[in-house]
Image (cartoon, rainbow over the protein chains, first blue to last red):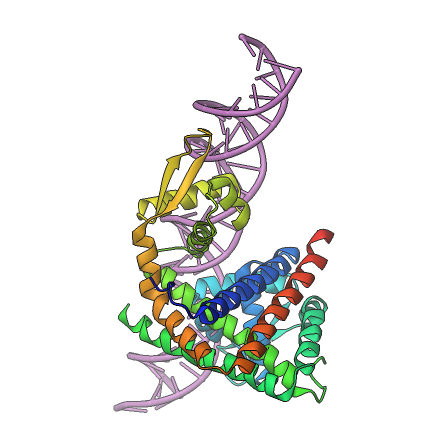
Length: 159
Length: 159
DNA sequence: AGCAAGTCTCTCGCTCGGCGAGATAATATG
DNA sequence: CATATTATCTCGCCGAGCGAGAGACTTGCT
């Protein structure tokens, strides 16, 4: 029903985008399996790296909310990551109820060794674009994110 | 370390693309939760819909290989989907060892009611692009997929 | 100060998704 | 027809994540 229109470009692009996200997910899953990480552990590491990059101090509570895990699950994730040496837990000296989370150098290096080449290639690809092409691509990505955000808001509240 | 270069555009685009895939995953997860589907169940449904679209008859064996599940897990997924009325199992009359899988109208309608609006908006977005912009976006998506595929091949064999 | 209430993290017991091994049924091969 | 092969399902186990609640620390009120 949604598919019988003559404007093939739109649907084709939708399909390409979906295929790309699937491929990226597969790649991430491979990386996780290879390093004895569960998908959730990888998501946690990424969230922690993002937090570190933005300068915000990460805590188990924040992480759990981001991953939609309850406290028990969050503890388990951190136990696994800490056991593997990817994360360190330290008490916050200002509020000693809190635990501050820190991603180790080892984890950063691991991620870079795996995703670095792909990122480098992507950067090279983007740098090879003309200014007009770059603008088109970035505009598309930005618009898509806005679109997805709108649809994400429309649904959840009804739960 | 990978981030101190002056070519901000490349990394910014990488970041945008990653953020978009994360958002899309979240959206899919919401949909799954709302319909009492596990992430794997959703992946299975999508795989089955893709198979149906491409005309290939789907079977538990094929599905399991695609999802990287073993036969026991595949049976469990199908049991759940069948119980929810999203999938039908029928014996293949030509090879009666095989089971053919068929996605029900109900499941298709469910997916369309949830993702239809987003797809429609995306199609509208794409249709609003100039030919040059469209070419840039499609070229980028295609190149990215090729890139990801190359990196996906480079890794796995070493397991 | 000191107690109550609130916040952050962790522990315990349970449910259920996925795996390994093997059983069962149907088809292909000599 | 006997044997090997293929496709699917059943059984017992492991482990991720949840709900409930305990313990450690802080903040606000009196």
